[in-house]
Each structure stands twice: as C-alpha cells, then as structure tokens.
Amino acid sequence: MSMRFNDHGVLEVPEEYDDTLGTFLVLDIGDDPYKCLVGLYCVAQIEQGRSRREVVGGESVAVELTPDHAILEDHFDPSRSKSIPFAQFKSALEALWAVVCRANGEPRPSRVYRPDLAPAEGDLLLWEETFGRRHPYRGAIEGIPARGPE
Image (cartoon, rainbow, N blue to C red; front, side, top):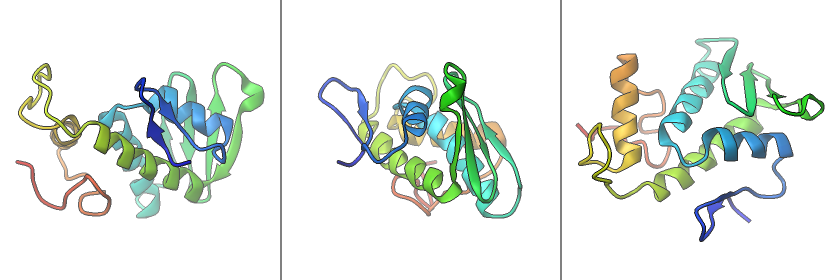
C-alpha cells in the first residue's frame, strides 16, 4: 500500500513504516502543506551540507535530523522513541508531500493567503515570503515547480 488519504480524509501510511514515523507523518504533518514544506526544508539543509543538525518539531513526535539519522522522540510514549536512517525519513516525507500536494490541488476560497491558488501552492509562496528565500525543493519534487506561481 502506498501513502494515501482514505475516503474519510484520514492519512493511511504503509505498514512498512515504523509506528513512530507513522505517528509523526499522520499527527504532526497530516494534510498540511506548510508543515510538510518546513520538514522538506530541514531535509534539504542536511542533504546540501548547510547544517549538521535540524529539528522538526511536532506535538506528538519531535525529529532531530543528522546526515545519517532521524532521531524520533515520542512525547507521549518515550519507549517508542528511536533512530532511523536519514534516507528513510527523507523518502517518507517526500512521499507524504506527493500525497498532500494531490489532496490540496484545488483552490479554497476560505484561505486568507492567496486564496486564488491551491493550498500547496499558496503555502509554498507563504513559506518563501516568510523565510525570504526560494524553497530548496523547487524543481526537485512533484508539486514544487521550479518556477511559479507568482
């Protein structure tokens, strides 16, 4: 099974994903494009050698990224805290982005920031405006175009 949102809008992750990683993906990122973009930024910082340590905060699971590992700290059950390979975390987050991007493909008039755009596109521009730079995943992954929207 690949990652997907079921008919009730609940994110389902493949069984091969670790429970703690699944908890992070479902509860801390979910269908929120902005949170996913923040996580992808942290991954890119590590992968491009700009940082040796990044932290992706979450209410359920906090993730500390290093070039070799993702250390997942479960806030509710510390016995589930663990370390997984960085590449596994990166792959899961990129797969989640593809699902989130597809699920957020239509503009929603209730959005305050750029309601003319699909939520994923609006959140991309909001992220870039907030941090004053292009997102490092521009043109590198489905749903984050090299150019546009403006």
